[in-house]
Amino acid sequence: MKASSSARKHSVITVAICFLIAVIEGLDIQAAGIAAAGIREHFALDSSQLGVFFSAGILGLLPGALVGGRFADRIGRKTVLVWSVAIFAIFTLCTVWVNSFYSLLLVRFLAGAGLGAAMPLLITLASEAVTPAKRGQAVGLMYCGMPVGAAILSYIASLDFGSNWKNIFYLGGLLPIIVLPIMIKFLPESREFLKAQTRVETAEVEQNVSFQDLFNRHNLMRTGLIWFSYFFTLMVVYIMLSWLPSLFMELGFSRKEGSTAQFYFMLSATVGTVILGMLTDRWKKAYVIVLMYGGILAGLFALNAAASLTQMYLASALVGAFVIGCQGVLYAFGSIVYPTELRGTGVGMASAVGRIGAMLGPTIAGQLLAAGFGATGVVSAAIPCIVISAVLMLILVQRLQKVTV
Image (cartoon, rainbow, N blue to C red; front, side, top):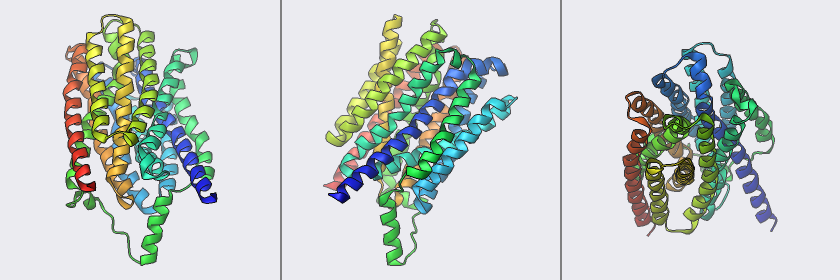
């Protein structure tokens, strides 16, 4: 009984603290889109340069995810996570003090590196804090912090405080500084990681886990499938996260209406992430894949077909529920695909590949808008990416079922 109570307490504390950090990630992801108008005016940027600004922070996520997951498998999840959040906090605050476009890109890149290292560790910690049967639910509950943070910032953007773009980044930098002492004092190290380390020490052998293990005969196909699915899905996710308010303005709506659409997008995303995470543990995985990618496609078609502001709000909510929830499910799949000793590296690498898509998405959207394709063209370009991701994930699920049978 005492052991069960201790395990439950461990799980709750881990998922709760990871949720707080995911809230901070949501604030940061939303910060770029909300602050875009002020930054564009302050630095005199065109649409193409604004797309590069969006992508700079996302580009930083790539090396962060590569390095963070790798070190977490070697020295521990908690230590690397604390340093990652600290780096993110410092360079987010630096965003308000830069005075040129290139220094702006540099600090966004470095802040993104800190955040990029943190995300695979949040997934790993949340999934390892519970039994395998509850991993989808744990990752969903943790990751719903991201849309919660983004929704909070969308609301703040409608207030006087949010009218100054620098206030957005002050908030984004100070919050993780407040959370850091909580992490250091209360966040427990992953028990699965500690057990794996104990097994290594008991056997008196070195743990020789490397990137090459992702491409051995057991992992090669599943690694390729999950990488490409992450790539195309996150490309669409970050197009929506970065450009949705601006796409509304392209269609003739006001900045406030664009921010309201983003709020509905994130509010529904919170619900969708939790529900899809729970379904991942309870339904057949193929059914969850069909539901979430089908929902994204329905939302994208609805955005293109909407003829009124109310319909646009509903379409934004539909896309948000499934596109962000889909990202949470993919992260849960990453924790299922790889064993404990390879999980940090595997999820980190998959996240890094996904971040390449996330980086390219906003830049491509900016180029499409600059070329005159308009908001409809941007949304239409996202549809093939979702179809490809759905097919790849269905193949992965089929292969995983063959292994377990």
